[in-house]
Image (cartoon, rainbow, N blue to C red; front, side, top):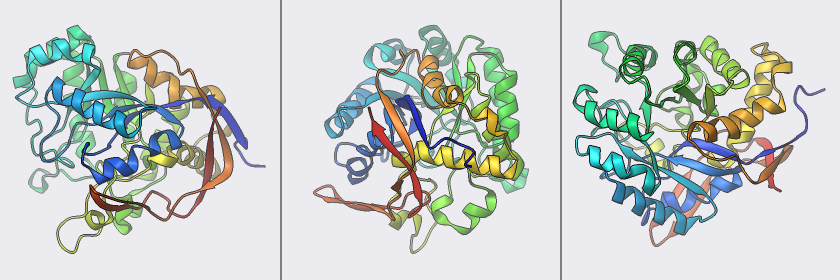
Length: 364
């Protein structure tokens, strides 16, 4: 008998970390934005690290949301700003009223389009205080950029960042903080140790991948990178024992196949999971049970409901989902690739676990 049931009826999911790329005028946005609802998700927190310019003003965030709604109006888009020297206290004061829920901090040089990112949080004290007062969330890419001279690599960059997380939580005790895409047992423990205002998101792919997987497959390479079996075990246990401290944030990061397999230069960092994220999580949990990483009795409907939907909405101050979805084992198969051709250009994206059987999603 399979460790999980064959069907689950759950509230619509909320994905609190997505990359939809440039809109309007972006072929990737045209391709991936409609896949949100296909995956059983009706609410997303949208990343601001666009190129050639990130989203640093409320007006830019509002325009971006409008463009996304023209592509797919059936999704609630929670917008964000990119923490940058041009972000002012005045922008923070008007943010929530315009649908901006958070400010994303990227350590400079740590990941895709982070070249405008943060070197130190000290210059942002007034902005952070205003965020604390206005209920605007600080979303952290919790990773120190690799620096071989200082012994920092993709394997320990997250652990090196955790003192920064602790300092921010101590200095701004009422600031709501999300440590995004946790990849290590150290990060899970840090989030658990800190107050209720500090939570973490966990992706679908980090529940399956290890360092050996992404070192051999460009479509598994992301930042922060997957780590060790012990770290993966900690993430799986965090999903099923979250109690509100951890919830879904897929960090679904679409890149055209030419960026993942360039003729020269580095491979783009990102794993695309948007259309099948919930199924990926269920598969990872079942694989974890088979390995002995988690007890089967912890994978309850309450745990899934909380991780997929309830905990993220609650932290972001949203009401519960009004729609339900049904997940059915083996009712879908992941495409080998997704393609778009139009006046915006052409793009091909390879999803995680391409070609495999997965869980189907039905809206009720």
